[in-house]
Each structure stands twice: as structure tokens, then as C-alpha cells.
Image (cartoon, rainbow, N blue to C red; front, side, top):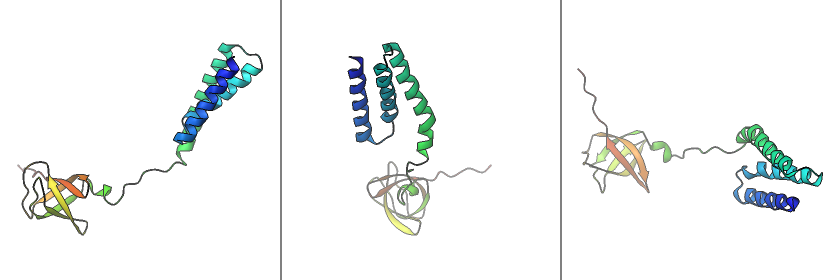
Length: 143
């Protein structure tokens, strides 16, 4: 009966890995496979469980960091890279509309608060659809 339970666990874990493609459940599927082998060799349920845990943990800790080198890293797109940059207000920016100039291009912009007049400089806080959400750069006081 235990071999059937481990086989079901193995199949479910492999299917989960195929569906997710995240290299997470595959390590546990390997552990379940070891538990099946221990069961077929006549090992106790406790030995099967410990075989499952030890192999799963070992593979997860040893091989997972190696596989991270081969997975793609997210790279900010041109638009995402604008967040945090400084821009010049070309047309007054308020909660509904406005225009700013950044990286050689004019962008539609808006604020979450007070209006910002033409000629001021702003920081791009976030992007909502095709509009930049900006905030006026706070002036530093010099003593």
C-alpha cells in the first residue's frame, strides 16, 4: 500500500513540475522516487519517509542554487528604467494631465497631489499605463 502512496505522490509532483516549470517540486519527486525504491526493497515506512526527506532536502539545497545560474533574470525595459529618474516639466502637471521631458522624449504625466508648473524638475515615482506618475523634487536647504 505504501508503494502506491509514494507512486501517487511522485506522479503529482512530476505533474506539478511540468505545469509550473519552476524547478521546485522536481526535487521532491526525486525524493518520492527514492522512497518507492526503499519501499520495494522492504524498508520500513519510517525509513521511506526519512529517505524522501533527506534526498529532497539534499537536492533542493545542492542543485537549486546551480540551476539559478541558468534561469533568465528579469531585465527592466526602457519604460521600467525611468522610475527614479529626474524629468523636466514641459506642460503643467496636475492630477489629470501634463507633460514631462526625460531621456530625450516627452511623456504624458500626472501627480498624486499638487500641480507642478512648467520648468520645474520632478522625480518619476511610478508608471501607470502610458503616464508617468511624478513628484516634485524637494529643494534642499543650505545653511
